[in-house]
Image 1: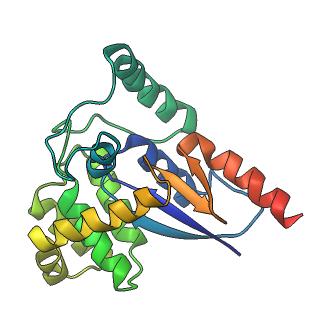
Image 2: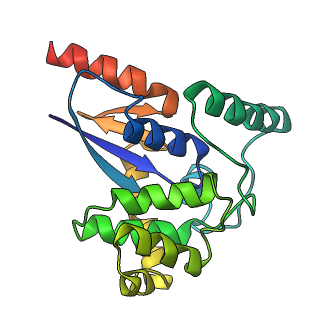
Length: 205
């Protein structure tokens, strides 16, 4: 079994597509993969690339034509991969609390596939605000994560820890999400899953 680090932020539709494809089995490489899901903040990654402080206010990095294409491509990709999707409400839900919880679970070695999937579904299928702790409490309840863990995994210290691990990922070459790293080689984007599978199959053979 090959280990692959999968970096994600819940707010990325392409990270959602990748997670859904892997979970549903529609992405089926011939090589067995041990996925290590690692939460990072896309906002911090963007700020690092622009030499801004970790939590500087968001600035849209896309030019207007690219933003229009991005929105069109999300809808088209959802149809292509047969992944259910609805526009988030609010459009830029605060993913930091959800990421902090996922980071705590990761660092404590707790399996949290069901929590991650519940949060992705809340944002991209149910149009729920994942920045609302009540929504996270519901995701936790449905996935076997304790309410107390949610409560202790948010706050300034947790936010700074998320920034720290995001900086570490950036130093390793991760500049966006989803990113998949295996054997020191990085594959960026949901559409690079197939390239990742191809590479792993060639290495095995």
